[in-house]
Amino acid sequence: MAGRKKDEIIHDHNGDGIDRRGFLKCMAWAGTGAFCVMKGGVLRSYSLSRISEISTADIMGELSFAQISDSHMGFNKPANPDVAGTLKAAVEKINGLTAAPEFLLHTGDISHLSKPEEFDTVEQILKDAKPKEVFYVPGEHDVLNDDGKQFLERYGKMSKGGGWYSFDKKGVHFIGLANVLNLKAGGLGTLGLEQLEWMEDDVKHLKHSTPIVIFAHIPLWSVYPEWGWGTEDSAQALAYLKKFGSVTVLNGHIHQTMQKVEGNVTFHTAASTAFPQPAPGRADSPGPMKVPAEKLKSVLGITDVNYVQGKHALAVVDSSLA
Amino acid sequence: MRRSVFTGALLMALGFGIAEPGAGRGNFTVSAQQKAETAEVKIDNFSFGPTELTVSAGTTVTWINRDDIPHTVVSTDKVFKSKVLDTDDKFSFTFSKPGTYPYFCSIHPKMTGKVIVQ
Image (cartoon, rainbow over all chains, first blue to last red; front, top):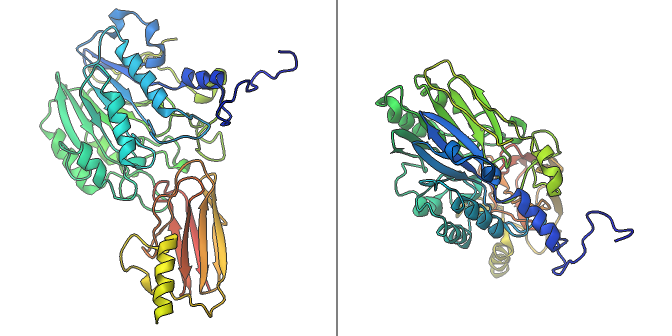
């Protein structure tokens, strides 16, 4: 080993700059998702990569589900040459949970180039997950070339217009939003008037005590508008939710976990099952990051919010496993 | 006549086509006699380079994606529109009429650029 650099590639069979050890490093950070459990109207979110460290009691609640995001099936660059493998790893983690989640949420960028075979591969891999029900919202990579036609044909059976819909599970109201269509030059994610009007009407009849979970691809809060990490008209959507005591917003798109609390609303972004992206402003552009696994935690900028008591009767919590 | 039809068809085959049928068809006026001018815009690091490009009328501009993430080249005024460009994919458009042509990446709309045709 003398003279060898720490990260030197020892066996590069495919000539792609990735040896087995390098691949296993990728596996250490990828294959991530979030396990969410609703307890007394309070949503807790745990990173799947560290789920084995928490007690069974902590992950039991009225309702649990898992969020996965940004599978980018079809991506094959050095940041992760095996996105199918890392998605499978996420499924294995979900299947290894003591308390199986009731369903899956996929917060978009299922595919990398909107190719039918990319969607097929993801669907095939997710068939092996114990939870059989999967709810999707589109990412911008899922609506390329056809303004989302294919996405709606595949996943839009319960959706309105451009892919938005709502459903109820054990007293929790879930709203899936589409904010990746009709993007304007120089702008951010967009919900649009039609979707906003639908949403206002959708929540009108609900009791104030109903826990609300919103899920959409691009963050509904301004993570970093310079990189397009935000949604133009999200403030209007959130205004419809002011009367509710417990609102949780789950997003993807930025390939890193972040949390923010604003009044009655807690925002979470999930990591990608495919590759990481830099923290806001920490690089010239938001392109895929090629980082060794051991450095990843520092660049992902994981923020842990352990307990937040809102002004209202219910609180929203995000827990890390540290 | 035959030649111009053939040239048009060839340009279409070379990927000069536009998603919206008919849109900008009048721009395919490059003839064999005309000296074809070309210019290139590189897509790298989530930006178009040069961001602002000035060319003379009749110039064919080729965008090439050097990023490891797909991008598109879409005219704000719907004059031209590429399919999604994966790494190393190209899109070309011939500008026959003078004017300012702003464009953006419809996947990452913060990416904007401009072609000025003189």
